[in-house]
Amino acid sequence: SQKIEQNSEALNIQEGKTATLTCNYTNYSPAYLQWYRQDPGRGPVFLLLIRENEKEKRKERLKVTFDTTLKQSLFHITASQPADSATYLCALDIGNYGQNFVFGPGTRLSVLP
Amino acid sequence: NAGVTQTPKFRVLKTGQSMTLLCAQDMNHEYMYWYRQDPGMGLRLIHYSVGEGTTAKGEVPDGYNVSRLKKQNFLLGLESAAPSQTSVYFCASTPRGASNQPQHFGDGTRLSIL
Image: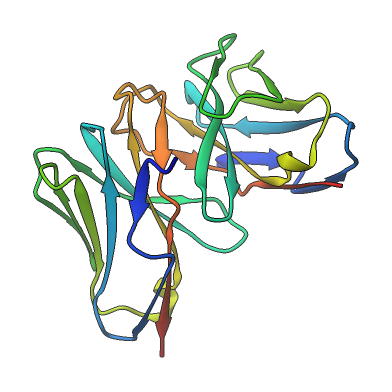
């Protein structure tokens, strides 16, 4: 059964717009949530991590929020560019000891010029 | 630094054949992981290791064995390959065991079982 859900399999947006990706989880109380980027034929690459007591985390054009009440994280890319086209994965450690990371299925983002 | 290197990159096997996938990391990381990635399923943990000489089962360990004889290497073995094991296999490592440790991934081994 799916332990983490990501809002959609694919998302198309116009260049310059803000992309918003959703990650929902159930039955866990993670201390951290991570976001990764994966390009075709490559392994995932770590982007951002947010703690349970952080409401928001930013890195350049990326912003992540974490709502432990809703059990949801939102990942935003502002001023999106075609180079942002990739699959984005969320992940959390359900054991909280770095031994059992669970990944969402990913959302494939396409930024159209 | 090469990071995490996986070999081979591609392989085609016949049902019943065996093979070993190699993962090597040069970052002196303690923890290493093997995942498989299937369409729509996300990455699923097969086995992991918390240090040299130790291994443990993940979510989908059946049909696989692992060994970590040296800290920098983590081997994944398929003793008798089955078509259901057709997948892309990723190795990852983290400096230590903690939820806030980013995982460093290799670029995967694409395995087809006929």
